[in-house]
Length: 368
Image (cartoon, rainbow, N blue to C red):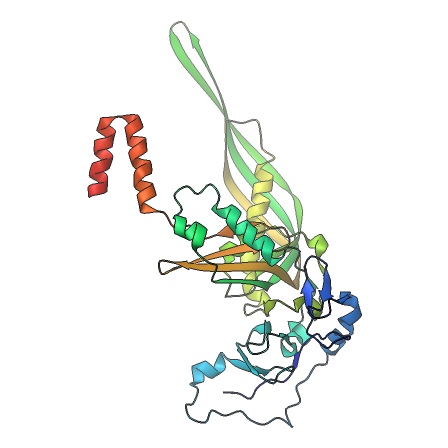
């Protein structure tokens, strides 16, 4: 295994020396020991070193396992860091950008993952705290009548953590041309006969549409569909990146580069452009797309960290994952488990309402 990386940073309270963390409610760095609050700008000078940050390797000793040797695959995907507070070793992967020490709990930022082109342009700070995320989970359970009582009432949350997810943001203008087929019908009766007249139309639409900050997550650890489901983010809350916002949260740098994300961004933009143009065609009974040509112009890419609360729980051996937009509070999650007894009672109640024949059919279905 490679030698530990000592190029880590912890935001310390100037008053008592305790580790400070970003508070989403106060929108400041807060010391949990002496309750002192600091504006992010007051500690942003620490970020000035990012552009020229280098690790001093000459004075470090090599770390070697005394007995078992790491395999090549393990070494390639693993990194070790030294906690500045207690000297403990923090194990992460090559993309870990912010975490906490497992020994003393202090919040640690891996500065080497923010040098050069790895430094984000923007960050949207956390607006919703952990307690809000827990309450949103309970609301997510509401109305789920077939949810097992044990899952809803006594099942604990295995994991809840605030994560800054790396996103690539795409700005572009599209020149779109589309043709639609549409119909309009009228019906009447005359002389004992029913008549239907259908008119067919060919409709062309063309124009330029600008898109700004279309997000695509740059982490393979995050499911793309889940990250898209908690959108949108309001970019008006974005600020220039500072590592101070990461203190107290987890973060990973991107492991999917911008070039790889372009195709997904283009697909999202093309789909949005087509939907926007189709909405301009109204007053018809049916509208179908016959052809679509979307050309992209003046593409600009930027890199940002967006806040997400990730929640996870296990029930009857199955893992359930939930995510919340930590700016807006929008909450999504996996399909929830179903109580088999409640489900059966529900079907029986429905059968009783529709008659004995349906009751017998459902009973036979359940017996199969």
